[in-house]
Amino acid sequence: MLVALVAAGGLHQAGSAVHSVAVTFNNATSGAKGPGTVQSSPAQEQYKPGKGCGDQNHLHDRKYQCKASVGDASIKEGNSGTTNMPFTVSLDGSPLSAVSVGYTTANGTATAGSDYLPTAGTLVFGIGQSTQTVSVKVLGDTVVEGNETMVLNLTSVSANGLIADGQGVGTIVNDDKR
Image (cartoon, rainbow, N blue to C red; front, side):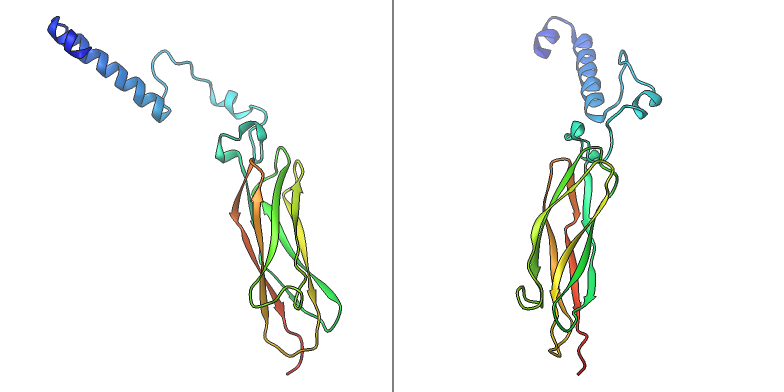
């Protein structure tokens, strides 16, 4: 097209057309508003319903996805039976629609079955709910040993969420005398 315009003596028009296409492309990729584009006021955008953490209506925009994190935990093992070691799983905001997060335990220096009971499942955060607890059962004993660790891993999250910190370390504190 440019060659045809140059041959017809329309070089100035061709340059203008190329510049116009480049400006339109740059505005489209940078998000800038060009001439003839209707801009909404900040007040109109600010109060649109349904734009917040976990909003299923805005899955294409990652900034509206809730970020899930799990904290570390620690508990004394006890001499017998089981003791619950609570891990807090939290979202960075209050979801506007349900967010589900999968979890499972894994060995560190502690061994599933002899130091703690393995667990896995899915948490579902309802609208407005931002924290939940996963309890891992620690098995008590009277064996003198060092502190041991296991982990709780976040394994999956629904499409309206992201995993920000996917591993919590659980420390089983030895309470037996040496």
